[in-house]
Length: 576
Image (cartoon, rainbow, N blue to C red; front, top):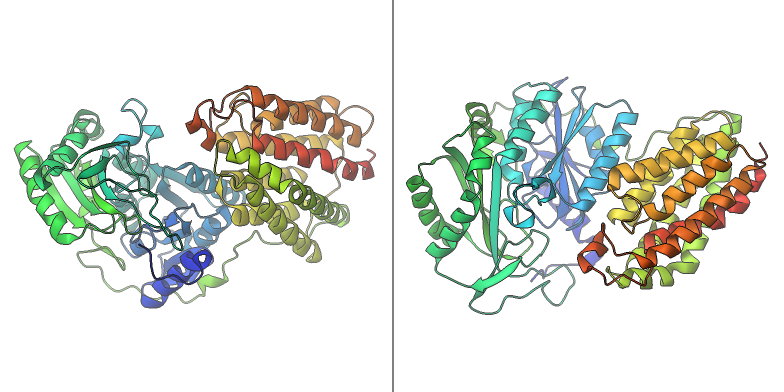
């Protein structure tokens, strides 16, 4: 049980604040996470990790020399928003570029991808690494579908050590990718965790049984089996990861040396872990494997989940040096590093939102009209919030309406503030997008945030908006959603409405009037959204429910069509 809670909504923020207060000589709090309290050498690559709260020591506990330069921390079991990731990255960056590292979950992929695009637009060189070590969550021939679990520790440790060693941005990323390809994990659970404020665990396991293939977000595992002895659990885990020994070792030219992490999930404590490790060590030795610098500890937890996992990373000489290299962080210490001088700046002053670039007269006027249009978006979403939630509840968790309302409210507030500072259209939309993403959260929040930012980039901070620029902005917005989310028409997502809208707007852009072209695109989006009722979900959260969503249109496509239709009157002000 998670018992020590004030307001559950504040749990993540209060936990992070307490962590930073407990380690003032090692970390500094910034918007969305923490960064090193010590100075980073100029030109050194910055490694920025991140994920949801509830996994401590991952990820904030790994910030320090030899490991991460910063960590972005989301809500409990939720990805940090792109704006939070950007804030941490800006505070960590010192001229050498940034590598963003995280576990392979849909929300993290979207938000870290969106953050990478925003940082690149600001002139920061960025690489992205998603850890995919969990053998239970995807087939061996398609490891890109796998989750990141306790393999986060060795893969991201290699990433940080490579930066510490002075490697270039491309080399740091290459070494992290090689470490990921050589890493495999498998876990078991004996009981679920309880979210802050909840009265019941996310799942239960019957007495005398265990779940095999657990996740670190409270997932129960892919199957249940009778609970065996400790040695039999050890054998199950070793056999599971060694089933892919050929592929993992092949990534580093057939090594027989491995890094080992035996990881407790929160409620399975050290004496039990050591009992299991005794058998694991014997088994690995009998398989002809030499273990380098083993870690038997709680390093990637799931609040108070009862369970454990094993991770093996096969090593070549370069990866072995990086895995064994010194690191000094609040929760992971190895070897010795000389003291570092403290930062002399205040990292908390790093901007959590894109800087305001004053627009010229026409762009400031356009920015004000955009803010007014976002007011219409907010009102439209609020009027349909309940319906959108009901649509989402058919094959999801029913929060789409709430998320859209929160996102649109935050976007309007940020846009109005930017207008007051004299921002042009690009900056108004960039700030609105960052606010929408952070406040709404989830996949939808990331996609709407990315779309607004991309639309603004096409408009710029100078000049007004004729039909061609608006059509280009719409296409850029749709392209960003497709690129980040990976969906295509027919997958039953908002893309089913977005692509017909952009196509029709472009085809009508040379016709008589922007408002008429927009209205035609909005009608195409409405019809396409309605048509999603006849197709099963192939991507997004609803895909796990098979054909359950047949007969119900996709809530993301419906909400987009509603917004586009409501915005049509705002386009009547532009007659070019």
